[in-house]
Image 1 (cartoon, rainbow, N blue to C red):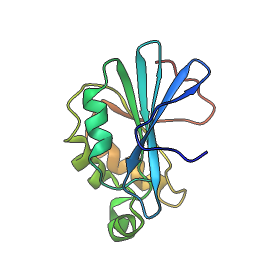
Image 2 (cartoon, rainbow, N blue to C red):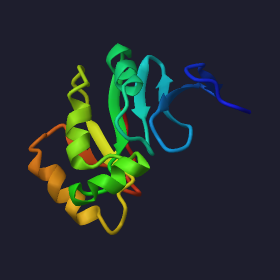
Image 3 (tube, helix red, strand yellow):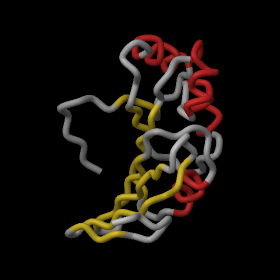
Image 4 (cartoon, rainbow, N blue to C red):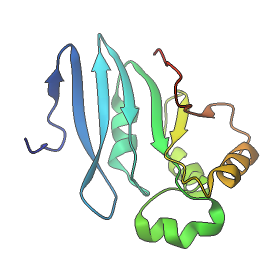
Length: 138
């Protein structure tokens, strides 16, 4: 089934709303909601606006999960591929008006160590990294 921008899908007791994001091929982030609690998930996005507008207008938002694929030294590659670096993440987070945890994922293995270091240098206690095998409760 083809997804329609911002038309919620019911998946059992979850509502998943596809939010268009900026990537080289048509891609969506998802607002995942259950019982008045929401998590905004996006991967494969570069700088975008609608994702943050949705985050700011979602009551019960508990977290934003977003990719940071490349380190700052690979900014041109990230821009061309429409992915984020710690530098562009910082700029994107200036659009976020709600205080929720920011959980990062989708680090390219060759860049992971530098991404973690550059994110640490942002000195933002609201940012952490999703870890494989962990269970998250919102």
